[in-house]
Length: 367
Image (cartoon, rainbow, N blue to C red; front, side):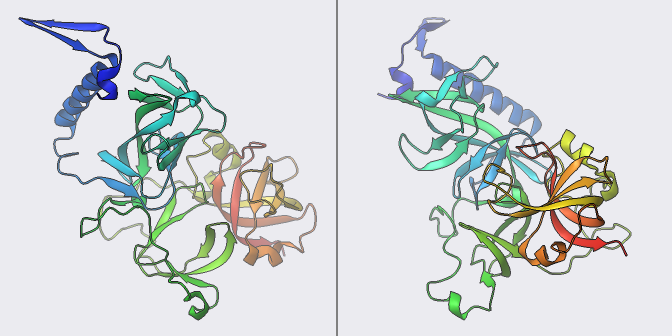
């Protein structure tokens, strides 16, 4: 007997000559499915019909809305059902099983459960099965059914489209995760510091827990400048058609650009996730060169960074993460020296202090 059929039956639906006994889980699932089909039929006549399921290429954020609150972190190869697209974002449905001890009942309308354990909990393909995602504490979920100690749940969210790929290969075989990009024994023959991304290519993220900046084409060679566990910081150089007029060769017109000089620390801290990956140019007052402790979870442990103030001695505190190839440029800085930096936004508000963090691209000292 299925989990949906085995739960207690409390509600009766009456129709002429028929009495149908329906479990609360099944009732909710039927209503939800009917509403979803009605919305898709009215608003997206072609969305979801004939679309093949997708998977994530590498670990990627699962968000409540495009560039919104992070609900969890998807594992490579996790299957997703496509619901809609919006610009560079894809709306998907994620289903799986969660340990009941890590869940509590939710008072949120339309949601049954909430992840209650500190640090989040795994979403699995089956009870005690393969991990599909790690859900954040506070993530709301719809309940589809239960087995002893486990709840089957689903959640609709958004994923950066460039991080998705068809679930099946041309031969029909399910792809669980990208293959090892470098065959055994080939690293010694590769150019010094370079690594081939393999036949599947893959997204390049702003940070290990960030969003996609670009997608490396299959068999691209990228220069590795640093390693942290399974992650590699890479450098990629190339050319892109980007005339000063702002014209683009094909596709939709770009969004109204935000001038780099307008993205001051206050703007970043007021919307911490909105500007991740954007490039800013700041004048800062250098205070000291530090090494990140383990408690600074937005950095790698031991990662060098500049403690500085934006604009001068009365400005807001900011952090400038220094990549290894730029370390020599900053080691000679004098406390309270004013410098101009260009960097990419890592986060608008660090977890420990709430100050913005940018990754240093270039630095210019006053002459």
